[in-house]
Length: 308
Image (cartoon, rainbow, N blue to C red):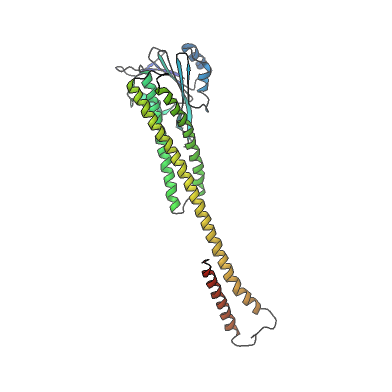
């Protein structure tokens, strides 16, 4: 799908039938014919356009003649609720701005609904505004992930953490690593853009790029902090589980010893052979007293060894 949007500082948003100077060319999941049309109409490098449709394409900056190709990755929510990132290509050159994506992205709704004041004629600022909204999406998703980790950590204090929580940890960690893999190259790309060699930057644009860099660096640190929190929770749970297992084994061993000692004595006096005091009236009391004494001695030894 190819749409042409036009908006100046003084006009309303218009959806054009064909391209005109200063319009924003929005390309979403293009067909083969649409790819060829783009390449022909704007003299694009076909390989770069096709790279934007590769789900694994990483952020980078390319320059071909007077055209700049900027690849970034956008955070999205999958149908099952998990997070993922998809590539987005900005093409800047001549008098046009083109975006190419695999799927419809949430940032477009913010522009079309009027929540963001913009002008397609301000091409550099438009690209930076889109990038800023994408950065805010990362912040929102990372914040949501942080709350999820804190919820699981709270259950750890009450020993209510389950195997499902650890499965969730694996998913969360994968998502955070996916975000890191997108944000770190994006920061490198923004630093190159800030030099002004690929896009013409006014003073206001330069401030936006610096804000984006700072915001992305904070997002990177937040991702790393969350990954470290997950690792710490896993280590804590491993230590707690190991300690609980040791206590359980210690208790079972103690119970086994305390049960075995009486069984030895009662077992001996339960045999059909001649035994000392077998005919004495006080034999039962003697045997019980002997067992009690053995138990007390055993408990004293265990306490002295700090087993209990």
